[in-house]
Image (cartoon, chains in turn cyan, orange):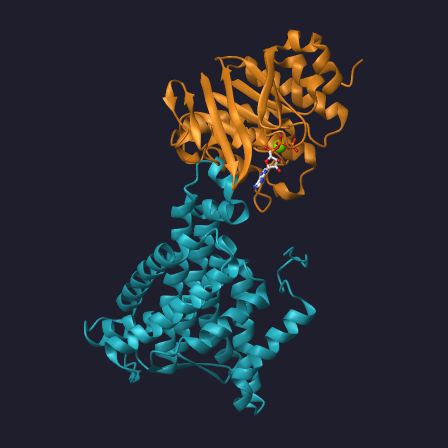
Length: 292
Length: 235
Ligand SMILES: Nc1ncnc2c1ncn2[C@@H]1O[C@H](COP(=O)(O)OP(=O)(O)OP(=O)(O)O)[C@@H](O)[C@H]1O
Ligand SMILES: [Mg+2]
């Protein structure tokens, strides 16, 4: 039972990683950039959600929505201002810029509101828990899991069935060929950043609900882990990010359950090293060596 | 229909097109032949807006298109089938064709064009759910052409459609190019297979290291000793 319990916890946590990992993977898929500021967008999302709940006195879903929209706008602004001018620059230039943007957001938030943590209110939804065969599933976990699943289904729908989704896949495969179809590449890249950042915003609110405590540097570790999750699934591959996130959450919970909770954060990086050694293209990736 | 006047195109400091001028009249098949690296693909990319000329002008149906982005040029009715097909390998045949009609809103017209393309290339109909990356080279070429036709172009640019195909398939592709032209689409055809190209083209241009060195009707060029020696493998 203990095992099942940890599995359930792991899936909730993993669904948060998955939401963040999706943004990493989508952005990488389209502009081949590891957006190191992505974890900070997640942090901003957590704060926007927090202020919507406490100051605007809104419920979970309206706060989630506000957070997602704000993060989408933030993501697009970052892309337009910081990354777009570097689209033809070397990868390392873009990467360093991303790290710069990350620091700017972190310390920008500290400058504006200070470094002190906040606590998400615990009474956002009734704190009941369901019992399945002796496994307790809290209403929070269910809400987080439910929200993530709905968002992921929505994402799959957008990517596969809508015009903008098809444009996103076309651009990520071959930018010039997409241009020849009449696709506006800049708008498509913006849309990708918007969607990825909105998902990170949602993850921020979910994280706040789950762990209660939020603070301006909270995006660093989950951001890194979500990056690991994206690599685990195969960077650039959307279902890969989903599975990678869930898997990482479950692995972490099981490691804690086995009594190594101090090792929890380290596990993600062990996974990263193993993946890079044995399956560099990730679980879902084709193992072709990249030409550099 | 298309008037190119004295354009110069550079890649950094490589001068790839040196004062190229070229005309295409409505309804024609014009072919551009030249050796590897002569600048054929560069010219097509410049016409379709993927590259910008440093100077000179390109008029399409009387309007200047030389500064415009690719998107605007497709919208005006000019489609480009790039060298090497460039199909969206991660998408099905059907999705590739849908993307060809990306800028169109007329649902009925799009439906008709799907039928037209499937009529022209029955292979694509059989394989419409297949991922295009798993198609054979010939099928990918058909898809790339079909995809371009989905935009209902007035002028179609084809960059080496016969590259890497078996002789029988080359014949089929050329027959289809002729059919597309018969049904009212003007064509600019880039080819290394000069024999085949001259056999269906009305007129031809020869490009050498970024310069047009010769032009004339296909018959004239077929007779020209210079062309026979250089491009037709003749004596
Ligand atoms: N992206 C690029 N950067 C720098 N130089 C380029 C680039 N693309 C093409 N060139 C150069 O421009 C010249 C013309 O190339 P282009 O691709 O137009 O030739 P082509 O006639 O299409 O040849 P092929 O028959 O081999 O396709 C060549 O010398 C090529 O090396
Ligand atoms: Mg070429």
